[in-house]
Amino acid sequence: MIEVDKTSKLLKIETATKSKLTSVDFNDIVFGKTFTDHMFICKYADGKWQNPAIKPFQQLTLDPSASVLHYGQAVFEGMKAFKDDNGTVWLFRPDENFKRLNRSAHRLQIPEFPENYFFEGLQKLISLDSEWIKQGVGNSLYVRPFVFASQATVQAIASLEYTFLIICSPAKSYYDGGKINVLVAEKFSRAANGGVGFAKAAGNYAAQFYPTSEATKKGYQQIIWTDSEKHKYLEEAGTMNIFFKINGKLITSPVNDRILDGVTRKSIITLAKDKGIDVEERPLSIDEVVKAHKTGILEEIFGTGTAVVVLPISSFSYKDVSYSLPQKADLAENLKKELLAIQYNQIEDRYNWTVKVD
Ligand SMILES: Cc1ncc(COP(=O)(O)O)c(C=O)c1O
Image (cartoon, rainbow, N blue to C red; front, side):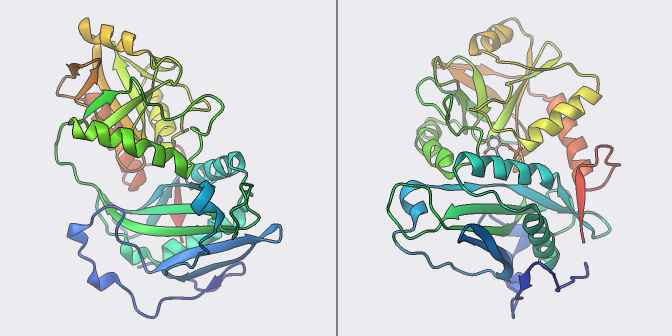
């Protein structure tokens, strides 16, 4: 068990009088539906972030005119905390999530969040709720920082007030061995040049629900998003970055203003390069992938993201033709194993990616 220092120079800490922990069946966790006992909250008003605090997890009150409900001025992050075999809790590259949060905030005209509030809030919250993290690979705590425009106004301008929170949800990864079939987008787009695709803006996700649900009805689990101009270049898979192994090389789209700069993506690129694999960050067209499939050199396709780590794709469909991938995704499995071993502190972290929660 981790000792919790309930005092903080920066934060006001109010602990829950009763934990919900005993009412949770950790063998039957549905992702994103159960939340821990506490949350971090901070408000922006009068030109500054103020009153950072940890409170018992609770509902918020919001004016019906709150700007976010009308104009969607909101951004979020997603990261995970892991417990190693000694009971120590580790965060994976939280500095990357912090930087991306503020890049997203900047694009949405949201005031950047102070680094000391972010890290102190994150550390204290997770150590307070560390009992919610179970040991063993597959168990983790999903950490969701987010910020939204809370000013009571329907004026279509950037809000003058914001609310920042961090909430945490216990997660368990299940691998059911199911096939992941994806549909290459020919009509809908996730992001456009000059837009907000690189940001974790709430509206990016809202706009994906309809095309994704249409694809799901046809039996696909995800959409591979293509460039908005010609629907030719393969950019992301659902809410994952996407990699293609062609003739021994690993190819992924370069990050630009349409693509989320995934923390898992950059970690996988580093691990792959260190294994001596040739990694190319370049635009990759569907025509090149179909051709590679036809000539037998398309070896693997996989998605990367915090939730799944690495997810091998079994088939993709383009212009009503389905293309199957080889059953074995050796590189994907290999990279996933190594990344998980770093996250769970089972092997040496040569890269200084993990941050201890204490
Ligand atoms: C659109 C999109 N792409 C890629 C990712 C993967 O990013 P990360 O590896 O930082 O979780 C996510 C998830 O955060 C996402 O929402």
